[in-house]
Structure formats: C-alpha cells, structure tokens
Amino acid sequence: MRRTRGTLLAITVIAALGAAVMAACGGDDDGASPTATPDGGHTVGALKVVTTVAPITNIVRNIGGDRIELTGIIPDGVDSHTYEPSTGDARTLADADIFIMNGADLEGTSEEIAKENLPDASKIYKLADNTLSGDDPADGFLYDFSFPKAEGKPNPHLWMDPEYARSYARLTARWLGENAPGDKAYFDANLAAFEGVIDQLDAAIEAAAATVPEDNRKLLTYHDSWAYWARRYGWTVVGAIQPSSFAQPSAKDVADLIDEIKEQGVPAVFGSEVFPSPVTEQIAKETGAKYVTQLSDDAPPGDEDAPEHTYVGMLVFNMRTLVEALGGSAAVFDGFPVENTYTQG
Ligand SMILES: [Zn+2]
Image 1 (spheres, protein in one colour):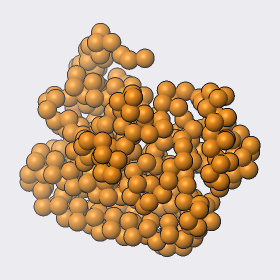
Image 2: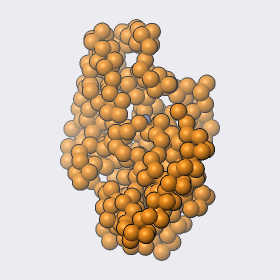
Image 3: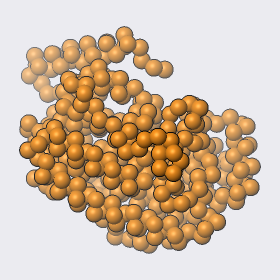
Image 4: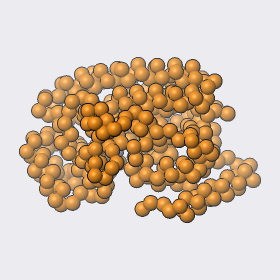
C-alpha cells in the first residue's frame, strides 16, 4: 500500500517534533549521530550522505571513505522493492546534505520521503537512471520475468554487473566532489583504487564463468536480479520464480516453470536471501535440479565488521556459489581482495 500525502506530512511533522525534542534535551539524533553511522564514518562537519541498499551504500563508502558521514536506510536483507521508509529514516533525511539512490523504480516510496524531508530536494541523485537509458536489449534497461515491460518498471539490479558498479562509483565521485569540493582529490583517488578492484573482479568473473560447461550457463533464480550480469557474461536467464507482484507464485506459474526447467535442462535453481520461499525447493525436487539455498543481490556476506562485508565480497560470494553449483571452478577467487579499498584519513 502506498502512503498518502497525509501520512507523508505526518512523518515530516513527527520528524520535526522529534528533532525539536532532541534539541531541547540536548540529545543526539541516533540516525545522524557522527558515532552512529553503520560502517564507521565519522568526521565532524563532513558531508552527510544518505543511501538506500547495502551494495550501493558500500560503493559510496569506498568513494567517500571516512570523509563523509554515511547512512544506508534500507537494512540488509529487507525487500527494497516495496520499502517504506520509517520516521527514523525521514529524520535522517531531514538532517542530510545529499541522497544517493538506485532509482529505476527500485526503492519503494524512498524518493517521495526524500523529496518531503531532504532540506534541498534537488540533491536527490539516481545511479541507475544516470547509467542506462532507453530499452534497447543490447545496452539499455531490461524488462523481463518479474519486471515485465507492460508494468513499465525496468529490472533495477544494474549493480550485479561490475561495469555498472564502476559507473555507480564514477557518478558517486562526481556528486561527492560537487558537494564537497575540498575533498575532490581524495574521492578521485578512492575511485581509482575501487576501479582497480573492479577490473580484477570483471576478469575473474569472466574466467570463472568460462569454466562452467556451456550447456549449464543457464540461471533460474527466485528473485529476478541477474539480468544485467547475464547480459554482460553471455549467459541465459531461463526464468525467475517470483512474480511481478512480489507475491508467492501461483500453482500455474510453478507448473509452467517446472515444464520450462525440464525442457531446458536447467541444472540448478537458486533461492534468495531476501525472499525465502519453499517454492524454490519444491521446484528443484520436482525437476531433479540441484537446489542452492541462496544468492545475494542485496546483503553482503559476513557481519558488519567482516572484511568480506562489501559489494565486492557479495559478488565473490555469488560467483563461488553459482559457478560451483553449475559444475565450474571458482579457484580464481581464492585470496581475492574483497575488503574496502578507500584510503583512511
Ligand atoms: Zn532486488
């Protein structure tokens, strides 16, 4: 259900009241406190940046380093497609300088809440919309199983393709530099380091994917997040189990998928960390395909402080899972540098 304008206004008022009470008590706003940012950034007077999903938050962290105050509002493992920001998020946005989001209709009502609360609504930046345009299947936005053309919302998961993550990083460096010109050289240096890892990541994915027997280069996932990855590396997405409504698939959807999997000889089906569903396992059982519990397009592996809890770590985790399940070797990822690359200080 979408929020009405009245609810939005209420959130704004509650946020303003909350801020007033906080100020009166001399307390700190948790969401924006310099010591409360989720992954450790805290510089007094730093540019306050709000982002949405974890992979984007991590890309922005790798460019902004510890010279920005960064808050990602959509928690790991939460459905970003239908996300409705909380009053705490509204408060965080009311105290922010800029808001960097994916766009391409990913983040539920986040943009509306940002427009209502961000002090300067012109500081809303969209990564996907500045990376792709048009709907040419070769190089534009893709529309597919859970994101059909008829519904007008493209598949928003651009970041699963490392080249688009590179674009996200470049855009971020530009926007941070425009809003904090004194740190532009620092952001640009961080960008160069991040792009170095993206080069390595792209080459390693290419090498690992090539070890999978050609007949097995087919993806059937619960959540439809592999379209851009598959386009880049020349794989086929056979289908996605999740319907465009994000509800559970109907009995007919499931029966159709089972036929498709049998016909195409799909060797494995992959679940999702954000949308656990018993249907994936059922489909695997009925088709004889291998069932792999999860791929991740959203939550990086490990806990918050773990070195692999990064965008790059997430891609490496996915590649190991996917390539090994489909009969290839992921040895190229042994010792891969998954940790953050930004310069401290
Ligand atoms: Zn998604």
